[in-house]
Image (cartoon, rainbow, N blue to C red; front, side, top):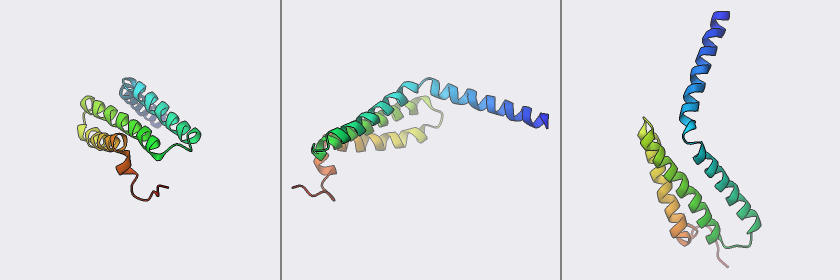
Length: 112
């Protein structure tokens, strides 16, 4: 039984080292994404009378930043496609939300 526990401990230690190595360089991007998400939520609560355009633009900033961080991560990762494709999609969607919020909000939203 102790041999199995030792193998498990070694495997867990190796996994912890790999995760720490991957997240060690990009912890700041996760922090900024989290702060932007909190800011977007606060804006939605306190600016509830604001137009949807403002909320679309704020959401666009968040998605655009997240996409840029993913693209930067793609150049540092071994499996580039795993970060590159979602990063490109996020940049495109973020750009649409940021620069053309009226296009994003046309469907399903009635404007008074």
